[in-house]
Image (cartoon, rainbow, N blue to C red; front, side):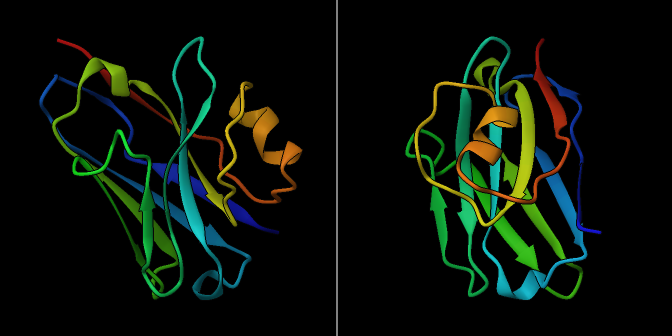
Length: 130
């Protein structure tokens, strides 16, 4: 059984930092692209960042320079370091395997099966507030 389990989400003050983790099991982690998505309350699913097995990365343009993705293939884990957080970063953050890059107006739970993705986590909540 494939499982992706996110952790690290919590409430922090504006300007703070967080590191999210996603640990995978049941997949050939070292052979697959991984990605982070997020969905803010009342908003659509948004691609945050992706990383391939060779550590080539992609970021949403608006987040580049503040968010950093990395992976440890030995631990089957992908990370998302988020710096200088602001209230607009408040969202549920999802980890997913074999990410897609399409824009989508719906929720992440709709996005993933719509674009034929097979594996994603349940999400971890990040709240930025004073």
